Image (tube, rainbow, N blue to C red):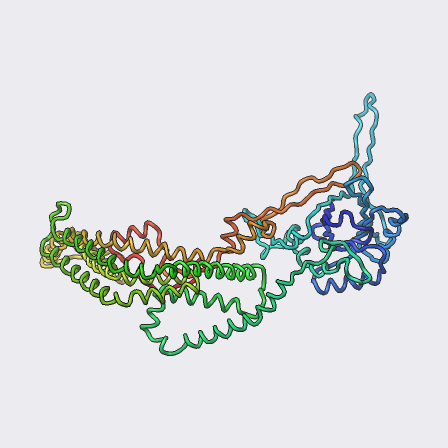
Length: 600
């Protein structure tokens, strides 16, 4: 049997006294949390342990005694050993440290059925018999009753760290009983009230733990805590006013509700409103995950606002907004000129292809008319463009994500004609593809069963076959002209979608990236623990085996995956195969859709 004792490094040179901690009986191990120094009154020790047990919820007890020889303390070891009768335990640890040695010696005292203390230690009995004629060789009998292993740990790091469940076959702590290591981490983390007693307290007890030299405190942190109370109240009041405004009946009408679900700025505004509602809640974080989520949201919001203020500083310095406004109309004219030349090229003989001239002329003039309408719209809005940019740039004070969302909406409005071209071409091309597929089934004596969603056999008469042949021929010869226009405008649409996708990915990155968790991983890697590793610290003859426990930090990829904030997605996530299929049959790619559920 092996008894593991988790011993804090800060107690290696503590004065003689009592060991306070917790027995993990299911794992046959003990966690030492502090050493209460001699002199003390046993009644005060019992009262103190009961108070700490009520505050922390940990089953604290006196594990045994700790003896560090000093001048003038002869007989201390026997005195501490006799205390086992005052603090009755099934097992009493008597740990001694000799001068000049790094290792400890440990004796485990147990009580028998009569209540008497029995000393258990490692015993080895060897019996050897000389070899003789006709007798077997000597045998060796070894009997080992109990072996002690000391596992030294850094108490502050273990208390502040969060042990994450490791995958690769390790059971989930929610469904399986916690492991020995997890119970040890939880014991140290929940024993924070025990560490409030330091050497500056005037109480009857003195102890040694990681905060013995004095509790950590910061006046700035305390002032910030007091200042956050009225700030949260102000944010809560503003959110209540904003919720009341959003619940006005006029905003629930279909046009406004439809536009608010399509504009990226409105979606980002609702997203930040939910964040502010979570942060201004008076309820404290229920657990580690909720605390990390709030911290990640706060850091993400501060970084977002800082980047937005930097953008405002650049926009309003040296009159950059006027320069952008003056560049916008010539850029729109240049795009319209290029589109006009492209359509003129398509209305001729593009790449030497023989097109249907009548359909080619109809489609070309139709799209040219749309370009004319778009240019007229841009020139009509040109006097107001600078004002729109000036006031729109102020949205960056709410964060860079608002500015990027507003830019995405402006790109969508400025390229609305390209979206219309793409929809017209896609619908016309899709109509011909589905018409050709239906007429092809007619030639084979098949039809599509709408009720059963399958292809069934069907008999057609001569008139139906004749009309089907004519329609198939017409659609087949008109398909190249339609397909060419569809291909050109699909490529233009993909360019716009790619640019908007980069903006959306940037906004999603700022909203969801766990900056606080990643900062902890870089600056204090022990705060996010994936596991532990052990190395031999001391193995001296006559002493127990001493191991040093070191924390393995969580991998950066695991940090991002674990603490990434959930975000809203406005577009469906299609695979590349599904995207190519949609492009081939003429279905719309990334159409405007209602805001769906949260996606990770």
